[in-house]
Amino acid sequence: MKERHIKKGQLLVNKGDVSNKVFLVQEGLLRSYSIDDKGKEHIFMFAPKGWVIADYNHFDAPSQLFIDAIEDSVVVQVDKQSAIEHDVPKLIRRIQVLQNRVIMLMSATAIERYEHFVETYPDIVQRVPQKMIASYLGITPEALSTVKRQRLRKK
Amino acid sequence: MKERHIKKGQLLVNKGDVSNKVFLVQEGLLRSYSIDDKGKEHIFMFAPKGWVIADYNHFDAPSQLFIDAIEDSVVVQVDKQSAIEHDVPKLIRRIQVLQNRVIMLMSATAIERYEHFVETYPDIVQRVPQKMIASYLGITPEALSTVKRQRLRKK
DNA sequence: TTTAAATCTTAATCTACATTAATGCACCGG
DNA sequence: CCGGTGCATTAATGTAGATTAAGATTTAAA
Image (cartoon, rainbow over the protein chains, first blue to last red):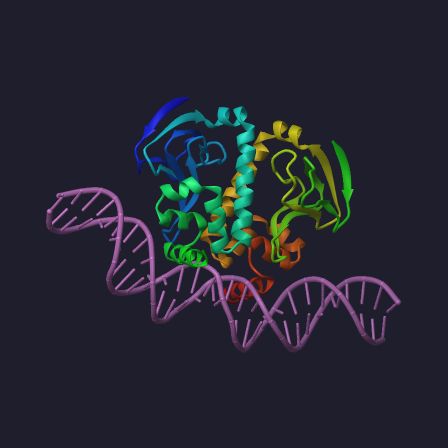
């Protein structure tokens, strides 16, 4: 258990790392993401203050995800083992969020996913570049641009 | 903790139910799924023998998912609370599977998702109708049909 | 401040997958 | 045995979102 100060852009976990660490966000904003074989980035989650971020893989398995800081951040680094035993409710919440994410990705259009994102994470929308939101939603920045234009016309 | 025998097609959990139960599959095959506002079914997971199936929602929150039996099945019904404390590793595995699922849905084409499904769950492919596989992959049965045709031509 | 480098938007074209519709097949109940 | 009902496949057409490319705008660096 150790406090760490992370600069914007700094990589905390690299794909392939065997870290077995979990990060409790005290301040700032982090993200985890994967890069596919075509070199495209896909944001898996954003972690603002109060959230936990980690690659919940098998112990000692190489990380599938990258984790880095979107803003200068402060995290507390905890051992995966103890974090897990210590805070089962956080695991459950993680499963809920992922469950929702899968259902969203399967059944909602880009517009609906964007609406949902804005409602659920209104603060994050202001803090990250559009291309990251697009990446989280599973669409291109260009497509997000047109989604937002359609929304404006409606209002 | 109670053993239950479920007939093929029988509904175990209805959307909106407040069940707080978790089901350990002893025999057979179950599935959980959602139905969107357009009336379309989306299979969230298959649960063969040895798996656990449940809607991991907040305690006392209404279920978002339906759960029913694809084959005649035997399950052991356990209280969510005790199941969770009892088997944290299963929770972790659940998160891993969901993590993979999200990455798949975001970065892979229908063909790649089908390949991955066949490799990961070869037994299930044989046991469920095509339309359920399509629903799990997030595509229509028609699209799955063409995916399989393309595969055959390659071999 | 000036320039360079990202980022965002708009528009034209392309493509993966959806939709619709028709056909063939298996299974099942009368 | 026959006529339904659901499932799988095929083909024709439609569409959401990707790709490509060109400006416009913001950010960062020199």
